[in-house]
Amino acid sequence: MHQVHGLNVCAKGAPPFLNIPGLRRSYDTPLQPMKRNRNTTPTARPQRRIVVPQPSPKRFYGHGIPGVDVEKLSGKLIVVEGADGSGRSTQIARLVQWLEGGGHATVQVGLKRSTLVSEELDHAQEGNILSRITLSLFYATDFADQLENIILPALKAGFMVLADRYIYTLMVRDMVRGMDERWLKNVYGIALVPDAVFYLNVAPEQLIQRNFAKNFSLDYWESGMDLGLSRDMFDSFLKYQALVERQFKRLQATYGFTILDGHCSIDEISEELRKKIESVLAE
Ligand SMILES: Nc1ncnc2c1ncn2[C@@H]1O[C@H](COP(=O)(O)OP(=O)(O)OP(=O)(O)O)[C@@H](O)[C@H]1O
Ligand SMILES: [Mg+2]
Image 1 (cartoon, rainbow, N blue to C red):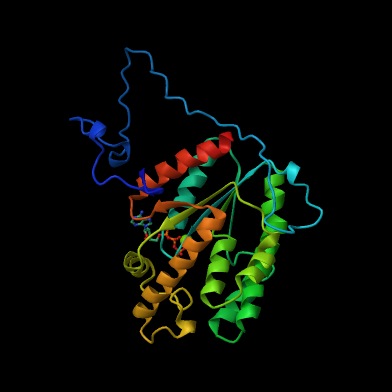
Image 2 (cartoon, rainbow, N blue to C red):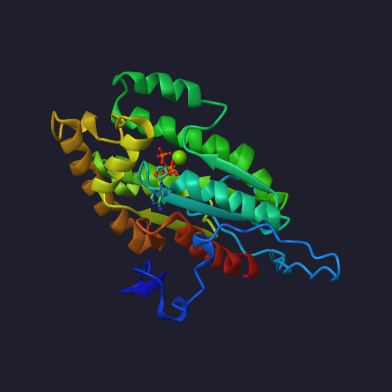
């Protein structure tokens, strides 16, 4: 990937320095088992550089959670944001392998994963019975529970916390539904500022294809069907995702996410994420 107008975009075809006959990009070529030659001494394996994370100053966006000593949070909080089907799980699974291979303990969090309310939230979303504010506060509760009971203790213990979405998706969804931005910023003032936030940007048309290939359907909420944008789910998905993208771009100005081109190959995105996270670990 390289930068164009501040965005990370992937190379179309191999960069010139890789167009050497016989040399292919590492991710195009599965590793071949090495043949052993009994008459030679074994060659040393390439050493992987171990990066020991340095404690970096942390802060909350607003009022935070009382009684938390942010100086003691030595782990790193890495957030991967993006729409349904943008490739978050794929990338997080690879990051976990890579980080753990480098000796870092990891923990994963995400939306609707709290022990406190995730089941109830699922039940509530089977119908459309809650008011927007109640649903919003339900999600905020789910987030607060994970923040207090998983994210903060894990960071205190020096873990790498990988968040599959964070407060930004929650805020954007509510903003698209007409809720007050200042009110939302105040509610999510409890959130810790992550060490890095990556947004996988994928065009809605591509998201439809990926979601269909994976689930054979689109999600009611992720298609914005509650908003009445269109009776047709495809059409509603396209309109809703365009609104979401617009709000994400607005928030980007305030929160400064790193936007990655989610159309790049899985390997290219992983490589870019690793490079960027290595520099976060060394900060
Ligand atoms: N860069 C990519 N290029 C092409 N296909 C991809 C890419 N990344 C992921 N995919 C494919 O897209 C589908 C969705 O990926 P994934 O499940 O990682 O997305 P997600 O953002 O976690 O989705 P969900 O919101 O459903 O949890 C999968 O079938 C995956 O293999
Ligand atoms: Mg996923």
